[in-house]
Length: 284
Image (cartoon, rainbow, N blue to C red):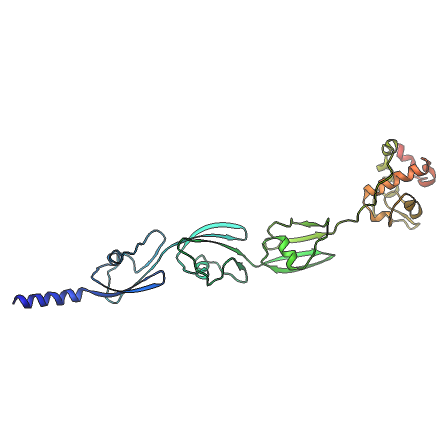
């Protein structure tokens, strides 16, 4: 009778044992266990589950024979998208799944690690630049383009736009271009001819603004039908006589004023011949 009871007990214990499978971070192990719940199984297998970890079935669930228990430990990710940095916990084992877990898609963008790359348990930093539409205006022409560039400089490089010394770029070269950005490249102006002849103090003190207002309404681009140029309406022979290059209207106001002052000095202050209608305004 005692022997029969022992055999019956062994049969009962044998029926209580369960063949289960634990998958921890993608690694599967088959276990024969007497645990009654998922938590008891994990304690028995020395598997820790903490904040942010994924566990299925839940820890309080009864453990059934043939059960598969999945554990994915949380990994910290420092994510920077288009210059904005956030921090997250993910349980995905690779970059592509981590982005999906965060409801992000690469969608033609650029990421700092391949989608198949592993996300280590200690975590990682990940940088992503989305695909954006920006407008580039350079050399008198403009075009819309798609880019994942991290800076205005990179966008211009992608468009094979070479900057020359003195070119102005807006927004600044090192700034980030969000979707819809308009990038303008303004060529450098011409290099001013040398100012080797000094302007006398008495000449500089004359009312040059009043003369320009009378001659051309102060317009540096003014050209008359009778062959006079710029804000001071200077003829080309006189412009060249004082070292001017090209035509006056090609130069900024400061250059035109300097050459007009030299002209005044060259003619000995006899303004009546050069500016008969407006020269008196110099003394106003």
